[in-house]
Every structure is written in C-alpha cells, then in structure tokens.
Length: 416
Image (cartoon, rainbow, N blue to C red; front, side):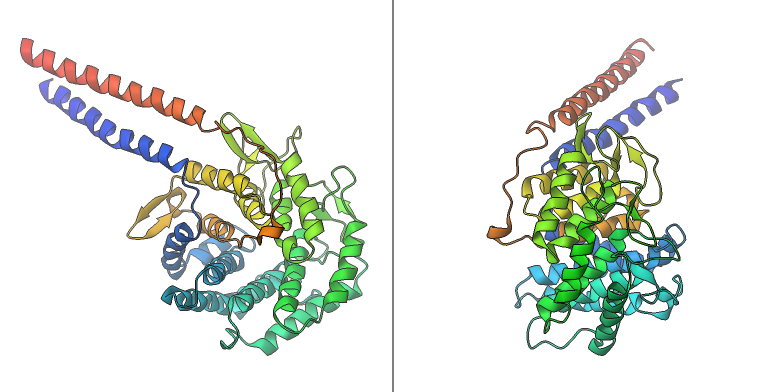
C-alpha cells in the first residue's frame, strides 16, 4: 500500500510538472502568430519529412498529396527568399530548396497520378500548381540571377494552359474528366499573371477574357466563385465553400485586385466566425451546415482547418493583418506545435501537408501600403479570455489534486 501511495504521489507531481508549463506555453502562444522565422523552422521539419517519404504518404491519403505537399513546400521557400535581403546567405538555400521542389513536381512520377489526355495536359490541378510554383520561384529570382528551372518547358506549359483557357466555353478547366473545381483554374491564371509581371507580358488579353467569363458565373446567392462548377459551361454548382474561397481570395490578388477584394469581402462576411472562444473560418456559410470531405478535413464548430489556415494567407495578401494574426494564432493554439533543434511541427507532424499549407500561408507576401484595406474588427479583442479562464481553472484543479495527494501521503506516513 505504501508503495502504491508513493507511486501515486510522484505520478501526480509528474503530471503537474508537465501540464502546468504546457498550459503556460499554450497561453503564451495565443499572442505569437509567427511569420517568416516560424515558417523557416517549419520548413526545416518538412525538409526531413519529405526526405523520409512524407509526400508519398500524403499521396496515399489525398488524390493530389504528392504534388500538393512538394508544391506548397517549394512555394513557402520561394516566398522566404522574396522576404530576405540579397545579402542573407539563407536566401540561396531557400531558392535551392524551391528549385528542388520544382524538380519533384515536374517529374514523371508526379504526373503519373493525373490524366495526360486532358486539356491542359494532366488537368487543371496539376497544370496550375506546377506552373504556379515555377512562376512564384521566377518572381523570387533577382535580375541577373540564372533561371532556377528550364524556361523553355515553363513557357510551353504556360502556352498550353492559356490555349486551353481560350478554346473552351467555360472559364474553368477540368482537373479530372468531367470534374471541375474553379479554384484549380484560378491557381493557373495567377501563374500566368505572375509570369507576365516578371517577363515580357503575353497573356493580358487571355486573362481579361477569362475575368469577364468568371464574372458571368458567380454564385447567385453570395456573388462569389463557387466551389464546384458544371463541367460543360462553368456555371456554379453546389454553392460557395470556405476552403476554396480563401484560396481564391489569396491567389486573385495577383490577377485582379478588385475581384480579389470582392471575394475576400465575402469570405469575411459569411465565413469568418467566433465560436466558443475560438476564431476561425467556416467551411460552409454562416447558418449553413454541411458534411466534411477530403477538401475541408474534419469540421469542428463549423470551422475547417484548411479554410482557417489558407484564410490567414488570404488576409495577409489582402492587407488585413489583424485577422491574419488572429487566424495564425488559432493555428498556434489548436495545432500544438513542438519545436526541437530548430524544427517545428504541428499535430505531431502526422499530416505534413498541413504543415506545408501553414508555412505557405504565413510567408504570404504583404501588399504595399496602398494595397492595404480598411477592415473592421471581426473577432472581439478579448477573444483569448475563454482560453485563459479555462486554463486557470484547469491549472487550479491540477494543483488542488496534487496538493491533496501530497497531503494524503504525508498523513499516511505520520499515522502509518
């Protein structure tokens, strides 16, 4: 009996010794959204995870997991390179890592998951993200520096994508046979726009015509681009959803500022929410419940993890720093990050594509001062108070139990 009491005493003290600092760290992180420095630590973790086959593991879970994980990893490194001065030695490493991602995304192994016979070849998802990665990396390269990939192949792929846009009766291209998700096409159009801002412009008329067609196909209820579309004419189908709307709000900044602001305003009005002391971005509009799927991930309190994480990037891109920091802080609190030896992982690192999405979002380039919006507050200033209150109660309970066990052990010794 004495041995059992002694074991209980030390077990209780051990739990208290771990739980109390953890609660303190959790509450401290509620004020640490993190930007480029935090993303670099994430990318250090992802570097090792990718070497160990993380992209292949994600492919077994998501239909596009391999390409998506490598593309987001490369995009985040390219954006880190953009944020660093030319004299910073880390910049060369960032460009090299992004170039390595390009080699994986453009490989035959990556293309094998997609349908080569589609227009554009391999479908809108693959064509768009492979182009977008290269466009962002090209933009991160300074004048006089060598091209980080084969420009001839890049230009050929861009021409194929633009030709597919121009030939069709719909502004949205298929990712798979008879399967159209507008966000996939938006990625490719953003790639063309970035390319035109970096090299001699070629696609301005294509983009202008595309924008005109898109504005004729907005969701009739919310006035935003829908999550899915009819594969024949591109008319909206199935409503607007938070994850894809956040993604398009983020990407359209490089295509058309007015449409980006319009989409982002709808995201703020109908999808940003605050429930049970937690701010986030909903997968379905306020007042609408829907099922979780591979795009949304698990839906908790109406919130989608991808919508919230990508929503932070959309907020940064549209000059809404307050909401961006709030959403990034939600990820810090809910994601339980652990950083060891300069490598930072979220949720134990079990879903590397989630880490890659977060690194991509938090390295989103901020607009120039004239591109910043005048946004009102959506989340109460004191939104962290429920977290602090719950942590205080939990800490008090742990201390109370620890004290009782300690006192009980002392009493047993005195009377035993």
